[in-house]
Length: 186
Image (tube, rainbow, N blue to C red; front, side):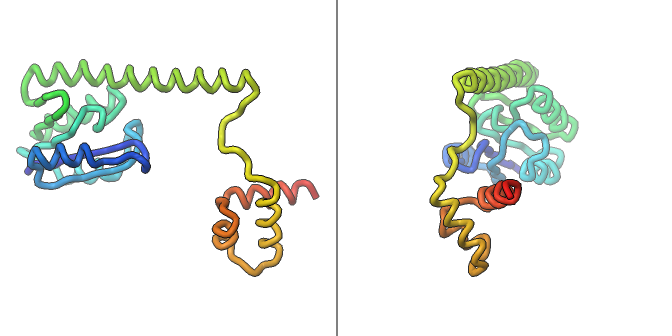
């Protein structure tokens, strides 16, 4: 059986391009998820691993979709080999059932890890630079009038937390933080 696996890192990203490529290849079953590749435990990947049997094929659009860590990617490749499962990466034109494919997976997974490490490094450098200029991360705070309205609605006890959040356009965490800050100030 041919299984397709597609993954993007965030909810906002689209899986369409990967799904189209995997369907064009002719997969029998497609598993998708929206979760960072740096996490080892991914529900749909775990489901895929449970379904695999000797002789099955796993098709991915790119090695980076399977994982960003060289160690984890190579562990998955080894797991597939031990189970008698063939891994095919469309973008890199790799079939791990061949010696050349095994070599390319090792080299390319190291490059995926390198790319991930550079992204983290640049992000941290950017945050440090921004902090040095007096900026801090996170969303800008809600304006005082909105928070005042939310607290008044809360005190009136006529609405649920969810309703207050919807009316004021804030999250429940923002409301609870305001309540805690108010309690601490008293």
